[in-house]
Figure 1 (tube, helix red, strand yellow):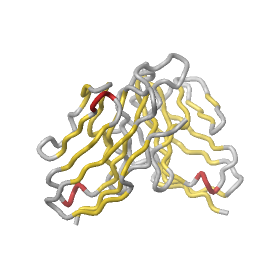
Figure 2 (figure 1 turned 90 degrees about the horizontal axis):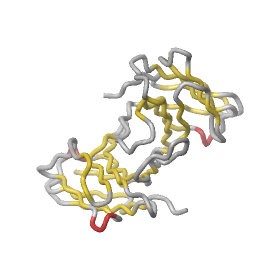
Figure 3 (figure 1 turned 60 degrees about the vertical axis):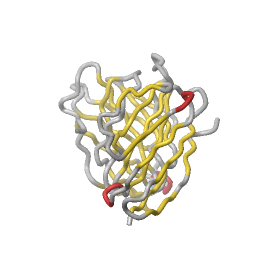
Figure 4 (figure 1 turned 90 degrees about the vertical axis):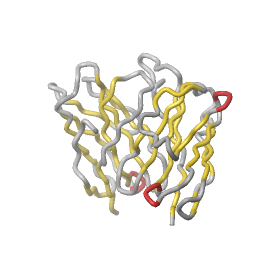
Length: 111
Length: 119
């Protein structure tokens, strides 16, 4: 079973920041928070991952609370192409273990 | 860099028929995964290969599903005979053999999937 809880769906206006929350209250000390997204009719795509510090890359920012029980994925300027299902996954990093997906958050970006 | 290739993209069969899916991973990726994604759900792992050896097939319905990865490169997933509940998208993914500390060595790259409809 997935170790994370996410809202089923969210809306965001184009050009605004999209903030996607994730709860992972049972996360272990050696587990990282990973985010993938799945655009319609495509396979999932890696976005970002982190342990405890905030992370940023060209796609998004990841904010992890100090107690590591929750996190937020931020898309700073959402576009229509960001409409997708976003999955928050907790796992031990830097290994090839399977990804355990929940049902994710369906983000709809509107004009 | 070419991504993960899968074929066919779509397949419609009747129950009790057989079907096979093909996957070509990213060059140099030792680990290959097959996931099943039922409509409205997240993907679920069916089988994982490391080179041509099976690492995890605990969720594979072995009475009807089989998979192989000859020569540690391409892989095929077969269903025989198909049931109505096998209707799903079958996703193939690949990753490097070992994660690289500080890098993205454990990132899984997914293909576009094969959408199977069983009537």
